[in-house]
Length: 168
Image (cartoon, rainbow, N blue to C red; front, side, top):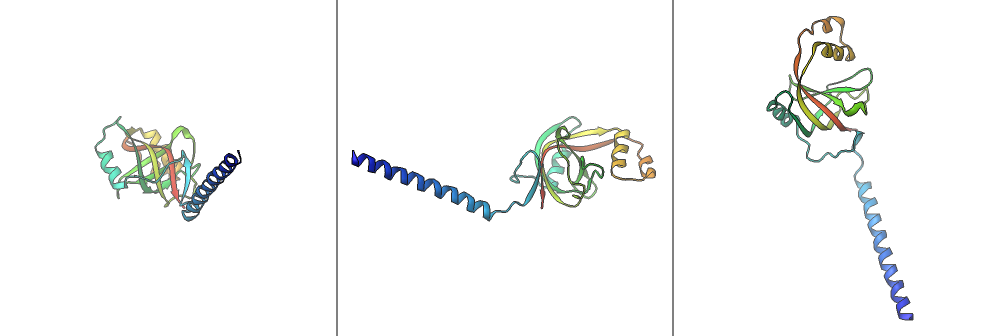
């Protein structure tokens, strides 16, 4: 009987000691890797994100109505100045994608222009009507003259983000 009690005590000590070591290891790993991103929307990782050039190549193979789930990296060119409810991300010098947020569920900080982001969600190609283009120009703080120059619909590379990581 005494032997069984001693064996139980030893086994309990060993299991408890191992468990504590694992917790400490996890805490140490967390301390070594400080959070490099602010998270908006769903929690996403920075793993396997396409470059903006790779994303442009993917968009160029798509037709109006096509969709693809993807994650890519770019820098914010422009953000809605009223709420942060959309942003434009450059894909090349003259090409960008308009990013909106799934279910209007989150917004970007108004001062986030120029920050690097990783966006995850649904990419698609669409035709944007004139009134919507004018609305976005107004949100961006464009002049009445600039807004009046928008007279034709535009084929656009669009993106609905369910999660965004913004580099701190």
